[in-house]
Structures are given as C-alpha cells and as structure tokens.
Length: 209
Image (cartoon, rainbow, N blue to C red; front, side, top):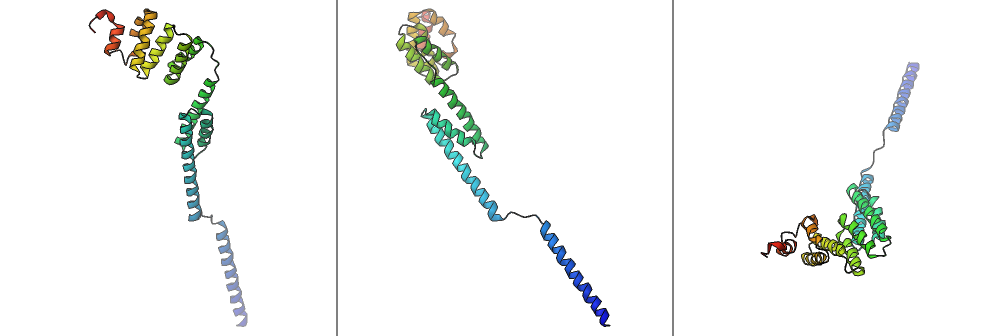
C-alpha cells in the first residue's frame, strides 16, 4: 500500500509539471496586442502632423500670392512630406509653379522687343498680369510700336479691362490699319467684340453707331 501512494503522488507531480510547461509555451507564442493607449497616441500624433502640414501649406500659399516664390517653394516642399495626400499633391504642384516663376525672374531682358516677345510668351500661357507688365515696359521703350499696342490691348481684353483694350487697340489701328482686320478674327477680343465701342472700332463702315 505505501508503494502505491508513492506512485500516485509521482504521477500527480508529473501532470502538474506538464500543465505548467504547457502554460508557459502558450504564453510565449501568443502575439502581443497593442494597447489602446498606444494606438490612441499614434492617432494623436497623426492628427498633429496633418495640422502642421495644412498650416505649412496655408503659409506657403500666402507667400505665393505675395510673389515671394523662393520662400513659398521651401514651405511647399515641407508640406509635400505630410500625411495628407491631397495636400501633398497640391503642394508639389505649387512648388513646381514657384520653380517656373523663379526661372522667369532670371530672364535677361534689355530691349523693347525682348519685353514684347516675353510678354507674348506669357500671354500665350495665360499669365495675363505678368504679360501686361512686360508689354507695358515694351511700350515705354518703344511708344510708337503698333504691334505692342495691339498685344497690350489683347492682354487687357483677356482680363476684362474694356476701356484699356479699346484705347490701345484704337492706337494700334491708327498706327497700322491692318490691325483692324486682325482684331476682327482674334479670339482674345471675343469677350468684348459685341460691345458697341468695339463694334464701332472694328466695323466703322457700318456707320450706325
């Protein structure tokens, strides 16, 4: 009888050891789960990054409109690295525009024709305000150039300056009558062509104005 008890006790000890080892193994292979506080902190950090990206983009936009292209480009490039894809894409597009504006600023212009040709290039890409500035400079340097008067009139027509467009086109026609025929077919004057002053300027033969 004593021998039987000893055997039973030995088996119970062995079973306990097996259960303990199994528990250790199960605990070792169980994957770690992120705590709620850790995921919450990550979300908060993401939100802060998004806010910083938006604030940087808005500051860059203000510099862009102030024509401070170098400073604006640096901020746009910072915004490109933010988490919001839409903001990053717009920042990249604006950074590219800043690059182009900075390159244009380095163009060497000396004569009236230089300013005229560059103004026409800007006009073709619909950078109207800059085109006007260069054409006005060309006109100051060459005040009797009919083609400059004509181009400036087109730029003013595109930005809705009807009076300026009419006056400069009138002078262009006075200097070179063939400009009247060109203006009749020029889409740049399309928004103003139906107005009475322009009709009288472009079609004086009708004589019913």
